[in-house]
Image (cartoon, rainbow, N blue to C red; front, side):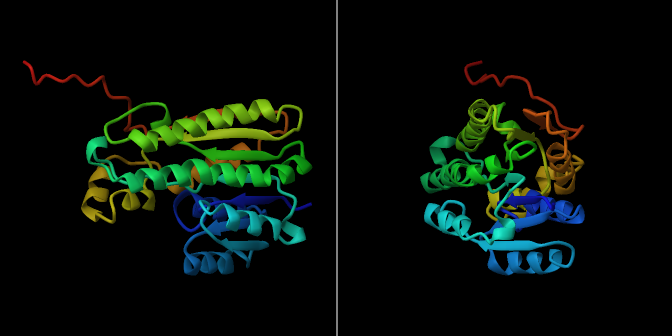
Length: 254
């Protein structure tokens, strides 16, 4: 029987790379994305290799999520995997100068969107049972604070705790829950964060040899294909060039 995976935020970055990796392995795909033209092009390309069902929607829209999931065609109804990839960071300025709308958007996407997809798809994952996996995309920002991470880091800390709590609630169902926590990765994510500032984007990765979306997709594929009795609780990844900075000290009184 063909395995089916539901991937949110599939039109760029980790989500697109995951769609390609799972299609390569013959998994059926349910892909969501806000950008219709991109999603349709990706679905058309990957449908040459496997069955694909595209859903043009924003994970923040609860009613749209409910309707789309309720209306899944029967052949996509039983899921083996959910990859909660949709998420974003907006800005990296200090908290006093941040846009409150950006904060709300991060909370609505990174927390509420993940909640909606998880809760709405849980019955289908439980129906699959042993070997089904919920893969949440967290971040090292949920573990380690840095200037400008404020709400983004807070949302990713939620992802980590939510993942651990889900594991408790799903014990006995056979459904696994994993939280992957990448460090410096090069993708459109940062261009969105910096409002399209290409120079700032380029400076972020200059000389750093960052992780690529394909690296994350390969890691996620490995997690979902572990033996059914193994759960990867959390997995933190950084490029070799990245490490933890020392504690900051204000020396303005010196």
